[in-house]
Length: 357
Image (cartoon, rainbow, N blue to C red):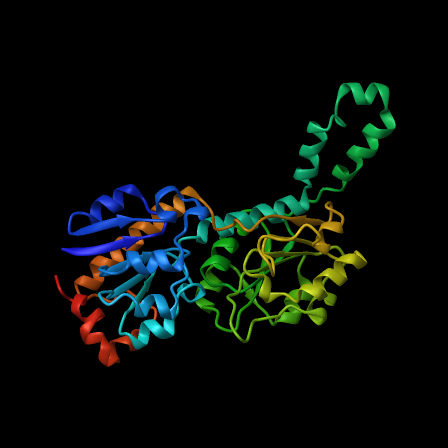
Protein backbone atom coordinates (compact mmCIF):
# COMPACT_ATOMS: atom_id res chain seq x y z
CA UNK A 1 0.00 0.00 0.00
CA UNK A 2 1.19 3.49 -0.87
CA UNK A 3 2.20 5.76 1.98
CA UNK A 4 1.21 9.43 1.87
CA UNK A 5 2.38 12.20 4.19
CA UNK A 6 0.19 15.31 4.32
CA UNK A 7 1.40 18.47 6.07
CA UNK A 8 -1.03 20.81 4.28
CA UNK A 9 -4.49 21.81 5.47
CA UNK A 10 -6.74 19.19 3.91
CA UNK A 11 -10.44 18.41 3.74
CA UNK A 12 -11.39 15.36 5.82
CA UNK A 13 -13.53 13.87 3.04
CA UNK A 14 -10.54 13.77 0.68
CA UNK A 15 -8.29 12.30 3.38
CA UNK A 16 -10.87 9.51 3.60
CA UNK A 17 -10.87 9.17 -0.19
CA UNK A 18 -7.08 8.82 -0.34
CA UNK A 19 -7.21 6.33 2.55
CA UNK A 20 -9.10 3.91 0.32
CA UNK A 21 -5.87 3.06 -1.51
CA UNK A 22 -3.09 4.50 0.66
CA UNK A 23 -1.96 4.87 4.24
CA UNK A 24 -2.31 8.60 4.93
CA UNK A 25 -0.48 10.35 7.76
CA UNK A 26 -1.33 13.92 8.73
CA UNK A 27 1.40 15.75 10.57
CA UNK A 28 2.39 19.29 11.51
CA UNK A 29 0.25 22.12 10.14
CA UNK A 30 -2.22 19.65 8.65
CA UNK A 31 -3.47 18.53 12.07
CA UNK A 32 -4.72 21.80 13.59
CA UNK A 33 -3.83 24.37 10.90
CA UNK A 34 -1.48 26.04 13.37
CA UNK A 35 1.78 27.46 11.99
CA UNK A 36 3.38 26.86 15.39
CA UNK A 37 3.03 23.14 14.75
CA UNK A 38 4.88 23.12 11.41
CA UNK A 39 7.54 20.45 11.26
CA UNK A 40 11.19 21.31 11.71
CA UNK A 41 13.64 20.16 9.06
CA UNK A 42 14.69 17.25 11.27
CA UNK A 43 11.08 16.24 11.95
CA UNK A 44 10.23 16.41 8.25
CA UNK A 45 13.19 14.22 7.31
CA UNK A 46 12.10 11.67 9.92
CA UNK A 47 8.47 11.66 8.71
CA UNK A 48 9.50 11.21 5.06
CA UNK A 49 11.69 8.15 5.65
CA UNK A 50 9.23 5.63 4.14
CA UNK A 51 6.84 7.96 2.26
CA UNK A 52 5.90 7.53 -1.41
CA UNK A 53 3.81 10.70 -1.88
CA UNK A 54 4.20 13.99 -0.03
CA UNK A 55 1.34 16.54 0.04
CA UNK A 56 2.87 19.81 1.19
CA UNK A 57 1.59 23.28 1.92
CA UNK A 58 4.09 25.65 3.54
CA UNK A 59 6.95 23.43 4.73
CA UNK A 60 10.39 24.16 3.31
CA UNK A 61 11.22 21.18 1.11
CA UNK A 62 14.95 21.66 0.65
CA UNK A 63 17.56 19.70 -1.26
CA UNK A 64 18.64 18.10 2.03
CA UNK A 65 15.10 17.05 2.89
CA UNK A 66 14.52 15.53 -0.54
CA UNK A 67 17.79 13.60 -0.60
CA UNK A 68 16.98 12.22 2.85
CA UNK A 69 13.74 10.65 1.56
CA UNK A 70 14.83 7.54 -0.39
CA UNK A 71 11.30 6.27 -1.07
CA UNK A 72 9.79 9.58 -2.15
CA UNK A 73 8.34 9.40 -5.66
CA UNK A 74 5.88 12.26 -5.97
CA UNK A 75 5.39 15.70 -4.38
CA UNK A 76 2.07 17.53 -4.46
CA UNK A 77 1.94 21.21 -3.64
CA UNK A 78 -1.48 22.58 -2.72
CA UNK A 79 -0.20 26.00 -3.80
CA UNK A 80 -0.12 27.65 -7.23
CA UNK A 81 3.60 28.36 -6.97
CA UNK A 82 5.46 25.29 -5.66
CA UNK A 83 8.80 26.99 -6.31
CA UNK A 84 8.17 29.29 -3.33
CA UNK A 85 8.92 26.55 -0.79
CA UNK A 86 10.09 23.49 -2.74
CA UNK A 87 13.53 23.00 -4.25
CA UNK A 88 12.20 22.29 -7.73
CA UNK A 89 15.69 21.78 -9.17
CA UNK A 90 16.47 19.03 -6.67
CA UNK A 91 13.12 17.36 -7.34
CA UNK A 92 13.88 17.24 -11.04
CA UNK A 93 17.39 15.86 -10.51
CA UNK A 94 15.97 13.12 -8.27
CA UNK A 95 13.25 12.21 -10.77
CA UNK A 96 10.46 13.32 -8.43
CA UNK A 97 7.61 15.08 -10.28
CA UNK A 98 5.83 17.99 -8.62
CA UNK A 99 2.09 18.35 -9.08
CA UNK A 100 0.39 21.62 -8.16
CA UNK A 101 -3.17 22.75 -7.41
CA UNK A 102 -3.77 25.71 -9.68
CA UNK A 103 -6.50 28.22 -9.00
CA UNK A 104 -7.22 27.45 -5.37
CA UNK A 105 -7.14 31.13 -4.35
CA UNK A 106 -8.72 32.69 -7.44
CA UNK A 107 -12.06 33.44 -5.84
CA UNK A 108 -10.70 34.59 -2.50
CA UNK A 109 -7.98 36.81 -3.99
CA UNK A 110 -10.28 38.42 -6.55
CA UNK A 111 -12.99 38.99 -3.93
CA UNK A 112 -10.47 40.48 -1.49
CA UNK A 113 -9.15 42.78 -4.22
CA UNK A 114 -12.70 43.90 -4.98
CA UNK A 115 -13.18 44.50 -1.26
CA UNK A 116 -10.11 46.75 -1.17
CA UNK A 117 -11.39 48.72 -4.15
CA UNK A 118 -14.69 49.29 -2.38
CA UNK A 119 -13.06 50.02 0.99
CA UNK A 120 -10.80 52.58 -0.69
CA UNK A 121 -13.77 54.24 -2.34
CA UNK A 122 -15.87 54.23 0.83
CA UNK A 123 -13.91 54.37 4.14
CA UNK A 124 -15.85 51.62 5.89
CA UNK A 125 -13.07 50.74 8.33
CA UNK A 126 -12.92 54.34 9.55
CA UNK A 127 -16.73 54.49 9.65
CA UNK A 128 -16.82 51.35 11.77
CA UNK A 129 -14.42 52.96 14.25
CA UNK A 130 -16.84 55.88 14.73
CA UNK A 131 -19.40 53.45 16.12
CA UNK A 132 -16.99 51.83 18.57
CA UNK A 133 -15.25 55.01 19.76
CA UNK A 134 -18.55 56.75 20.37
CA UNK A 135 -18.00 59.64 17.95
CA UNK A 136 -21.17 58.79 16.00
CA UNK A 137 -23.57 58.80 18.92
CA UNK A 138 -26.45 60.83 20.24
CA UNK A 139 -24.38 61.71 23.30
CA UNK A 140 -21.49 63.13 21.24
CA UNK A 141 -23.88 65.07 19.01
CA UNK A 142 -25.50 66.61 22.10
CA UNK A 143 -22.39 67.32 24.18
CA UNK A 144 -19.76 67.98 21.50
CA UNK A 145 -21.33 68.63 18.08
CA UNK A 146 -18.02 69.90 16.64
CA UNK A 147 -16.36 66.53 17.30
CA UNK A 148 -19.39 64.71 15.89
CA UNK A 149 -19.45 66.62 12.60
CA UNK A 150 -15.65 66.64 12.20
CA UNK A 151 -15.57 62.88 12.63
CA UNK A 152 -18.34 62.39 10.05
CA UNK A 153 -16.80 64.70 7.44
CA UNK A 154 -14.42 62.08 5.87
CA UNK A 155 -17.45 59.90 5.10
CA UNK A 156 -18.81 62.64 2.87
CA UNK A 157 -15.77 62.09 0.62
CA UNK A 158 -16.91 58.58 -0.33
CA UNK A 159 -16.84 57.70 -4.01
CA UNK A 160 -18.89 55.50 -6.32
CA UNK A 161 -16.89 53.04 -8.41
CA UNK A 162 -19.45 52.73 -11.20
CA UNK A 163 -17.99 54.28 -14.33
CA UNK A 164 -14.47 54.41 -12.88
CA UNK A 165 -11.56 52.81 -14.70
CA UNK A 166 -9.89 49.75 -13.22
CA UNK A 167 -6.46 48.93 -14.58
CA UNK A 168 -5.37 45.34 -13.95
CA UNK A 169 -1.67 44.49 -14.17
CA UNK A 170 -1.64 40.80 -14.98
CA UNK A 171 -4.76 39.06 -16.28
CA UNK A 172 -4.09 35.45 -15.49
CA UNK A 173 -6.70 33.57 -13.48
CA UNK A 174 -6.82 36.14 -10.65
CA UNK A 175 -6.91 39.12 -12.96
CA UNK A 176 -9.70 37.71 -15.10
CA UNK A 177 -11.72 36.79 -12.00
CA UNK A 178 -11.34 40.35 -10.71
CA UNK A 179 -12.47 41.70 -14.08
CA UNK A 180 -15.64 39.60 -13.88
CA UNK A 181 -16.45 41.05 -10.48
CA UNK A 182 -15.57 44.64 -11.41
CA UNK A 183 -17.70 44.38 -14.54
CA UNK A 184 -20.72 43.75 -12.32
CA UNK A 185 -20.04 47.16 -10.75
CA UNK A 186 -20.01 48.82 -14.20
CA UNK A 187 -16.32 49.66 -14.05
CA UNK A 188 -14.35 50.33 -17.22
CA UNK A 189 -11.69 47.65 -17.63
CA UNK A 190 -8.18 48.00 -19.03
CA UNK A 191 -5.23 45.68 -18.52
CA UNK A 192 -1.54 45.24 -19.12
CA UNK A 193 -0.19 41.74 -19.68
CA UNK A 194 2.26 40.85 -22.46
CA UNK A 195 1.04 37.25 -22.29
CA UNK A 196 -2.69 37.98 -22.11
CA UNK A 197 -5.23 35.70 -23.75
CA UNK A 198 -6.83 38.28 -26.05
CA UNK A 199 -9.95 36.21 -26.62
CA UNK A 200 -10.61 36.00 -22.86
CA UNK A 201 -9.90 39.72 -22.48
CA UNK A 202 -12.28 40.60 -25.31
CA UNK A 203 -15.00 38.41 -23.82
CA UNK A 204 -14.91 40.48 -20.63
CA UNK A 205 -14.64 43.81 -22.40
CA UNK A 206 -11.06 44.37 -21.25
CA UNK A 207 -9.01 46.76 -23.37
CA UNK A 208 -5.33 45.74 -23.50
CA UNK A 209 -2.94 48.68 -23.18
CA UNK A 210 0.72 49.31 -22.40
CA UNK A 211 1.77 49.73 -18.78
CA UNK A 212 2.24 53.51 -18.82
CA UNK A 213 -1.17 54.03 -20.44
CA UNK A 214 -2.74 51.88 -17.75
CA UNK A 215 -1.00 53.76 -14.94
CA UNK A 216 -2.01 57.17 -16.26
CA UNK A 217 -5.61 56.26 -17.18
CA UNK A 218 -6.80 54.24 -14.19
CA UNK A 219 -8.70 55.37 -11.13
CA UNK A 220 -7.78 52.08 -9.48
CA UNK A 221 -4.70 50.02 -10.35
CA UNK A 222 -4.73 46.39 -9.24
CA UNK A 223 -1.44 44.49 -9.20
CA UNK A 224 -2.05 40.80 -9.89
CA UNK A 225 1.03 39.77 -11.87
CA UNK A 226 3.27 36.84 -10.97
CA UNK A 227 6.76 37.47 -9.65
CA UNK A 228 9.38 36.70 -12.31
CA UNK A 229 12.82 38.19 -13.00
CA UNK A 230 11.09 40.49 -15.49
CA UNK A 231 8.33 41.69 -13.15
CA UNK A 232 10.30 42.37 -9.95
CA UNK A 233 10.05 46.11 -9.27
CA UNK A 234 7.94 46.66 -12.40
CA UNK A 235 5.98 49.40 -10.62
CA UNK A 236 8.53 52.06 -9.73
CA UNK A 237 8.87 55.83 -9.50
CA UNK A 238 8.11 56.42 -13.18
CA UNK A 239 4.95 54.32 -13.13
CA UNK A 240 3.70 55.70 -9.80
CA UNK A 241 4.25 59.31 -10.87
CA UNK A 242 2.15 58.64 -13.97
CA UNK A 243 -0.93 57.88 -11.83
CA UNK A 244 -3.80 60.34 -11.55
CA UNK A 245 -4.14 62.53 -8.47
CA UNK A 246 -5.91 60.43 -5.80
CA UNK A 247 -5.89 57.26 -7.91
CA UNK A 248 -5.50 54.14 -5.80
CA UNK A 249 -2.84 51.42 -6.11
CA UNK A 250 -3.97 48.01 -4.83
CA UNK A 251 -1.54 45.14 -4.39
CA UNK A 252 -2.84 41.69 -3.46
CA UNK A 253 -0.12 39.83 -5.38
CA UNK A 254 3.43 40.20 -4.03
CA UNK A 255 5.38 43.11 -2.57
CA UNK A 256 8.34 42.45 -4.89
CA UNK A 257 6.33 43.73 -7.86
CA UNK A 258 6.36 47.30 -6.48
CA UNK A 259 9.36 49.42 -5.54
CA UNK A 260 8.61 49.88 -1.83
CA UNK A 261 10.71 53.04 -1.40
CA UNK A 262 9.12 54.67 -4.43
CA UNK A 263 5.64 53.82 -3.16
CA UNK A 264 6.38 55.19 0.29
CA UNK A 265 7.75 58.42 -1.17
CA UNK A 266 4.73 59.15 -3.36
CA UNK A 267 2.30 58.27 -0.56
CA UNK A 268 4.07 60.73 1.72
CA UNK A 269 3.55 63.39 -0.95
CA UNK A 270 -0.19 62.67 -0.83
CA UNK A 271 -0.54 62.31 -4.58
CA UNK A 272 -2.08 58.83 -4.69
CA UNK A 273 -3.83 56.42 -2.36
CA UNK A 274 -3.03 52.77 -1.74
CA UNK A 275 -4.44 49.57 -0.30
CA UNK A 276 -2.27 46.50 0.10
CA UNK A 277 -1.57 43.46 2.23
CA UNK A 278 1.73 42.18 0.86
CA UNK A 279 4.99 43.26 2.44
CA UNK A 280 8.75 42.95 1.92
CA UNK A 281 8.91 41.40 5.37
CA UNK A 282 5.99 39.43 6.80
CA UNK A 283 4.86 39.98 9.48
CA UNK A 284 5.85 43.63 9.61
CA UNK A 285 7.84 45.31 12.37
CA UNK A 286 6.26 47.85 14.67
CA UNK A 287 8.36 50.68 13.23
CA UNK A 288 7.31 50.11 9.61
CA UNK A 289 7.18 53.60 8.01
CA UNK A 290 3.86 52.87 6.26
CA UNK A 291 2.21 52.90 9.70
CA UNK A 292 2.82 56.65 9.89
CA UNK A 293 0.67 57.38 6.83
CA UNK A 294 -2.91 58.66 6.86
CA UNK A 295 -5.19 55.59 7.30
CA UNK A 296 -7.91 57.37 5.32
CA UNK A 297 -5.62 57.31 2.27
CA UNK A 298 -3.63 54.16 2.89
CA UNK A 299 -5.40 50.92 3.82
CA UNK A 300 -3.01 48.35 5.32
CA UNK A 301 -3.84 44.70 6.01
CA UNK A 302 -2.06 41.48 6.96
CA UNK A 303 -1.42 39.12 4.08
CA UNK A 304 -4.58 37.00 3.93
CA UNK A 305 -6.28 37.44 0.55
CA UNK A 306 -5.76 33.78 -0.25
CA UNK A 307 -7.39 32.58 2.96
CA UNK A 308 -10.84 31.01 2.90
CA UNK A 309 -12.48 27.86 4.16
CA UNK A 310 -13.58 27.05 0.61
CA UNK A 311 -10.05 27.03 -0.82
CA UNK A 312 -9.17 24.06 1.42
CA UNK A 313 -11.90 21.96 -0.17
CA UNK A 314 -10.81 23.19 -3.61
CA UNK A 315 -7.14 22.27 -3.28
CA UNK A 316 -7.91 19.01 -1.47
CA UNK A 317 -10.06 17.84 -4.38
CA UNK A 318 -7.46 19.08 -6.87
CA UNK A 319 -4.64 17.23 -5.07
CA UNK A 320 -6.67 14.00 -4.90
CA UNK A 321 -7.55 14.31 -8.60
CA UNK A 322 -3.90 14.98 -9.45
CA UNK A 323 -2.77 11.84 -7.65
CA UNK A 324 -5.36 9.67 -9.38
CA UNK A 325 -4.53 11.14 -12.78
CA UNK A 326 -0.80 10.57 -12.25
CA UNK A 327 -1.34 6.97 -11.15
CA UNK A 328 -3.44 6.47 -14.29
CA UNK A 329 -0.79 8.01 -16.54
CA UNK A 330 -2.88 11.09 -17.33
CA UNK A 331 -1.27 14.52 -17.69
CA UNK A 332 -3.99 16.97 -16.67
CA UNK A 333 -1.76 20.02 -17.02
CA UNK A 334 -0.72 20.16 -13.36
CA UNK A 335 2.79 18.72 -13.68
CA UNK A 336 5.17 21.53 -12.73
CA UNK A 337 8.08 20.51 -14.98
CA UNK A 338 7.39 17.79 -17.52
CA UNK A 339 11.11 17.51 -18.30
CA UNK A 340 11.37 15.41 -15.16
CA UNK A 341 10.14 12.49 -17.29
CA UNK A 342 13.43 12.62 -19.22
CA UNK A 343 15.67 12.46 -16.14
CA UNK A 344 17.27 8.99 -15.62
CA UNK A 345 16.27 8.96 -11.94
CA UNK A 346 12.60 9.18 -12.95
CA UNK A 347 12.53 5.43 -13.63
CA UNK A 348 13.30 4.62 -9.99
CA UNK A 349 11.17 7.38 -8.49
CA UNK A 350 8.22 9.06 -10.20
CA UNK A 351 8.20 6.48 -12.97
CA UNK A 352 7.23 3.75 -10.52
CA UNK A 353 3.91 5.51 -9.85
CA UNK A 354 3.22 6.91 -13.32
CA UNK A 355 0.49 4.86 -15.00
CA UNK A 356 0.74 2.23 -12.23
CA UNK A 357 -2.97 1.63 -11.61
